Image 1 (cartoon, rainbow, N blue to C red):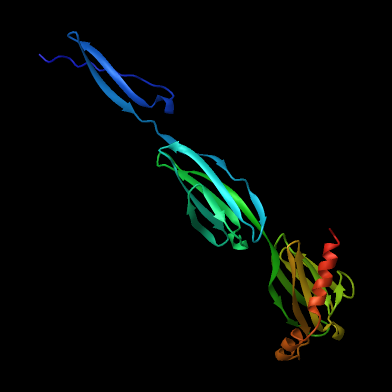
Image 2: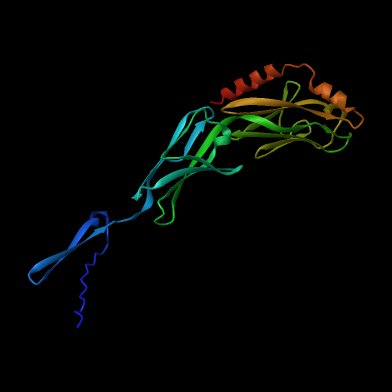
Length: 255
């Protein structure tokens, strides 16, 4: 007749890493002890415990991002960069070092910690890079007399650029001399409500912020003007450098 099998068990509630280790079950049979050993391994999901705060730096600076995590087994950490150009892998490890950072490196950096015990733990650091303006759009325009004319200037910058308009070396102001200046985010428009012969000529769009200053020449011309004449006028010698120095000096006086 088979001897009935008796099972013995131990129940551990709220298991933590301190419960890990060997466990021995001992029973006494016919005055002889018998033992069985079991080793308990406690697994802990990956969890990020410390990460860099959001940061704003000037272009050309050096920065280091940090992400620390715990878990059993030890978690793996990778970084990904999310920007307007997409989502791409950066590096593996707790730290990301960036030397001479560029505006293209701005965006959100994801720290992803995982050890295959549960879903990865993900935290994000936002990196903002300040950079001087650069004008991405400035087109000359042909408009007949008596019509509404618009010159457009678009500049990318962080912080956002302030715009100023000049005809030759004379600054133009909104609502004066029949012109209207309208700024919308990265774009500035110089609008002529009723174009006259005197309005034709070379205009300068100036974009500036605390990081720097730049400008572009734009021509308002009549419908009979040939494009090579417009290009020659845009490249004609005038003291654009003097204008930039004057504008930048006035800008500095605001601070």
